[in-house]
Length: 114
Image 1: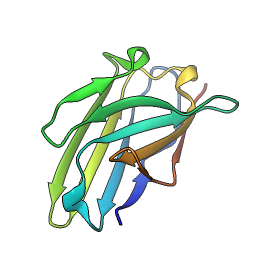
Image 2: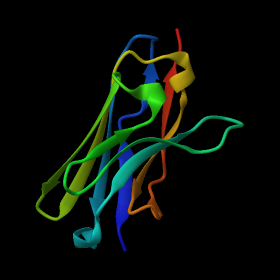
Image 3: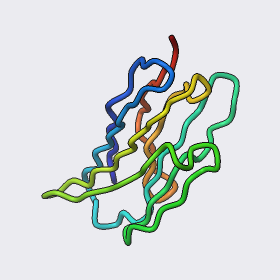
Image 4: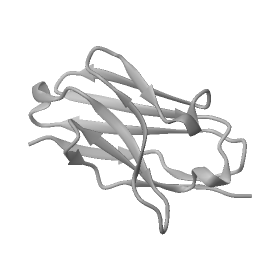
């Protein structure tokens, strides 16, 4: 079973940048689509961005032009990244990595505040 581990969250001021990483290990050859989701307090989890194994990307309207999703494979690990620029307070949430629509990481907190 695929294992996902996120990192890179933290506290950043409005207008700042963060880069999230997700390392996928175990049974990686079955991984097709991967994505980043987020969940703010009191709100449902929502898709932020997704990428297929072929590199096709899809972004939520609220992050287009600010966030960039990418992926890479090295040895026995698939790496998923989310470069987040021009961050806004409303981007504050727990960000989750997802593989094939069914495997989740533990989440990493992103807080945008002055």
